[in-house]
Image (cartoon, rainbow, N blue to C red; front, side, top):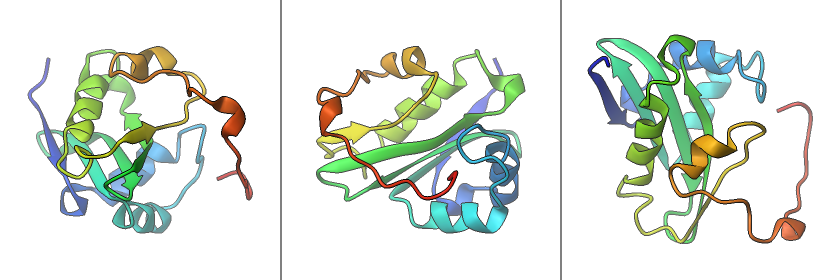
Length: 138
């Protein structure tokens, strides 16, 4: 296993690299670097994983830092998957000072339920209570 270092913050985020990764995702295909930068700058916590100078994973949380947080844009470079780095990154994010007092942390996933269950996530307890407004593809 490579010696991956995890870091917090926009100052430790390679926005060009994050755009390269996330633009290949199913949830925001083709997203641009400027949109990524704006989204990440408006987040409560950002976590990035580096193999030397290469950013190989990222995630972020939007939050009021007291009652609610929403984890999103979790992505691990293909060649680093299934090696435990994603789990370490989520744990790193959840252990941040900003999320420590938060009472309710949630996320949406289409296909990674077992991955998140390893960090304590469960199916939403009240799915009938969820509502949304969806504009466009992302």
